Length: 99
Length: 505
Figure (cartoon, rainbow over the protein chains, first blue to last red):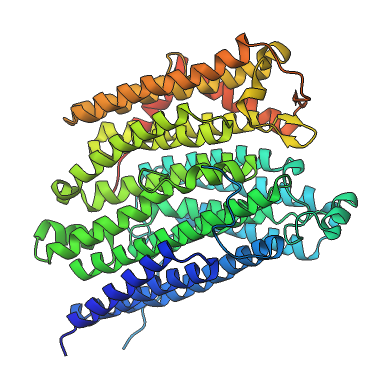
């Protein structure tokens, strides 16, 4: 199968994630959309590793997973704190800082 | 298959490793030391590791290496200058952070809860801000010297993740502080996803993740140009987000306003040095040969950033938001040093970064002093007449504002002059014109604040200038002295930068 098809899938996933970040209002869902974008980048990396015929891309993908895990730790901590003080995880409610 | 043992140049990596070691010791202190001795031991470990790291860095200043960690890190004169600036700014910021009054006693407690009140009354404080600062500093040290895409990405996250948490640690107005942490985190994660996608496409273009490999592919011109363009565009989104360039600036005012002021100062000064260091390296070393593809877009972004930052800052009523928009404008000025792609552009950028970082830190240090019973007063209207009540504080703040505006006899003038002349020499007249015009606009609102402080009647609403602690006084004294000295007698530093500022390829 043509490996370029995977690039198209990854591009589609990335776009879905990016649109999700912009239109969704729940902080958790926004965060999940970011994770979707990271995974789309991973799929791209692995596909390019296959196309280029070396392993560097796969190594980067492993590092990305570790970094994404750290990001989940920090991100959920922040979102949970916000939820505990406001009883809501909507990013529209968090608007004390005026424009 | 044989396994090759990695070769590490520990002397070059020493500053980063020392800071990381200090951070780990800080985590252990947080876990095991008795509460009463925590603050003093944390402060000692933090300052000591930063100072030792600076000493270790000075020892290796003349070394040049492209393979400090198996080709992942390249150390050179420019890397030395950027790392030294970051460490100096970090030491001065830690003095501000040490003022515990600004930080919440227990970040995990719900704002306004019994638990929070109790821990404040008993003065049971957690001091996690110190190790977090050190982790962020380690990431910042790595960011401008990394020379492959993995290291660049890991360093970016290493400097960002602690900063997201630190933004939420404010003692007063905790809801706003938490909100700024959430906004910073979500937008930061969003931009790192773009950054990673860019990494993937650069790898697809060149089949290599090292800067030198990508540069060789660009020179050879063998790969698919669509991948290269996508890669440069997406990576630039991630990097420009970190420096707060328009249109990726949306987080800057909110985070600057919501975060504890000491953290804002640290973030504004040190992150900018680190992020611009990485931008300078990647554009000068890797993308220089593809400059016709990215230069027009970057020129446009630089011009919009300067003008937008300066114009929007005029209408701000809050001093921290005003400084945030001014930092956006300064990001635009600094981008013209990147676009120059010349040795003089590099020197000017490094000088500007150092001078601007020091002045920013000093300005935020002064902001921490203006308080009423509910905490810091950041509403500009309530600053009126400050110069009559406490002339010294107001004069120091005025000095920093004049430096931001680029008035002669301050460091800002030398910085702006050298960066604009570098942009002009490289043939970017449009940048020069936009830069000078937006500097003029910016001077208007800086001087308006000075007029407000010195020539308006003071309002009696409990706003007062607190007596700064010894550490805060040190920071303010050093930053204002440096700002003044660099304005009057900049030659030694300029020559020092000129001898070191080169990128190894």
